[in-house]
Length: 246
Image: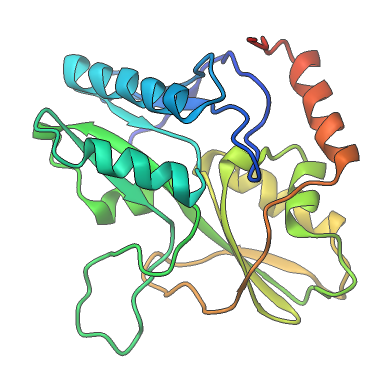
């Protein structure tokens, strides 16, 4: 796999689950395979679709691969509906993790019961498929030996280590001590190194789930930050030099 280099980005306020706030769109070029962030200037669904249109145009013009942040189902469904018949680009909706029932004989990667998803947009002739998109743009992490009842919520814990929610997909509570969650690959090391410090439990461990394993069934944790953390994340973005558009 070709190494990717993170470029400086311009972003607006962090992605909110209850109300779409703003979206940082990432671009991965197949020629130099670098990554940059891009943001629409509107918080409306129209603004999100407009930003994806821009990514699709660039993918078609430059033979590149683009990736959006993780989106809520309502927004993702609208984007999927609009882009499903495009002939110049492939718009692949990925959720992270194998979502089929283990009893199924069909090994095709499908969305299944996934909630939050992102889109991988590629030039039609690059041959990108759903399985490759899942593996390269979604990472599933399993957290074990965590006391879920006593710990901070995972969205709050992730925000506390500097992981913005636009980089986080589904969070599934498998049982009282085990949680699986999906993240963008670029924040994987950050989660593995720091997240256990924000959780309660004896011997809390985090590991990357093999791409052939199935995402467990369980309770989806609500993707909502405390107000204090929301304000802290906004300040961090501004302090880091992000530009907020009105």
